[in-house]
Image (cartoon, rainbow, N blue to C red; front, side, top):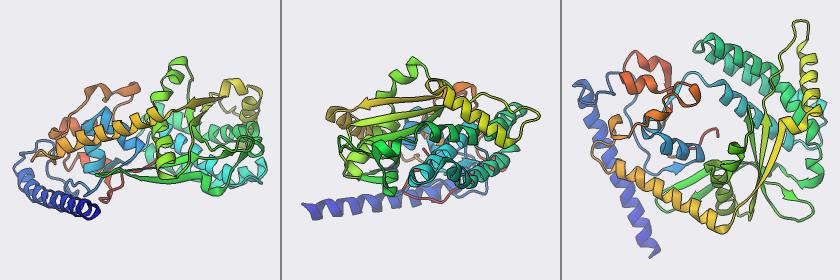
Length: 368
């Protein structure tokens, strides 16, 4: 029975490869004749799908939001040359906290010295994106850079006792998981998987940065794809048995640097503001998950993959218009979708200047 399963999977991979090669050959002809109106002459490699998908929480959420946007990101493998400042700050905060939890013996001052590398990377990333920002976005990004160090400093001041209450070893930080689900995989990284010193039970800590924390934000967390995905991945991919996720939210600071204030003084003022108003800036919500809810997430995974296979079963599956466009996210959260120009004008010599193309790979895992 096991051998039969193996040969069936091998045959499926060969069929996907053959269909992809045939579609690639076909698309070279079709784009010359503009039979695919959204894929015009450009210097990028043709669209391609991997023989076996490895979904991540991010790719899963994007597929459910807008299949056309998912196509541009994961089939054409296009990534905007600029990054949203909120995404950059969120990524930098995750990396900074990863450094913190991997160095339990470091004092806050020692940690801030280690943080310089992350701060430099953030500055460089903002600089790369600056040419694509309007003045308002550039001002927000500049302010975010200046507040980043103080925000993280405030966090470590508040949560130093984590090391007393939790057992944390390096492999618990950004732990990578992979779950084989038959026709596809589910992969990702869990921010933190410590063990409670008293109860000896493992749990998950998921870091998030947010501008505001309202009731609606909290109420929807039990249904959040990333939260559910991480506890599913920890149980099925890491061999852990967590039933709880601590949703660890840091509110972004709105203070502004004074004209006569040095960066160090500004960092200290932000850290003091975080320390003096912890209830305002920091929020940890414990979320419990039952076996039924974890099984439901696995069912959702299979249903989403079935939707993907339904599109791929179409002979025109490399055509962008075969992937449904969801117009409601074109200006989600009052921000223009970075792929909107492709959906309106198509990919050509003009619009391609806004994107980079990555290599084909099975793995759809990226920054969460």
